[in-house]
Length: 183
Image (tube, rainbow, N blue to C red):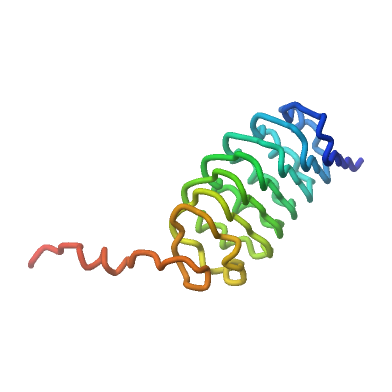
């Protein structure tokens, strides 16, 4: 049995996503774009193993992205844009090997972009603009083809000049500061 839930622009629907959503293991599409939902993404969302599209954009979710989301290995499209998500991008996202589209823009996500995301060879779209990210933007794997516009308006990203960010501090500088004992 295949289950699709599409509730866009309902406006009047105001609630949380219940943790019991994880019991509905046959979800293929979960699209709740532009609803008045509140609260957090439940960790049980990681139980939707056959889902191929999840769009929870413009809902006002807060707190963080649960690490359990990395269990969605066949997910192709994930959009969490225009929420109030905080914290980091979970390292477990690198397990989402089917992922082609990931939009986390317009949130309050902080910390670094995990270097492990360069393993997502199917990733064709990755937008983290307008967040609070800092550190180096990965430059290998799918990141070789991403536009600089997907990284704008963050705290302090650095990396390749093609991303229109300053270069990262040189690691060779740190090496030269290392003191070796004299023999």
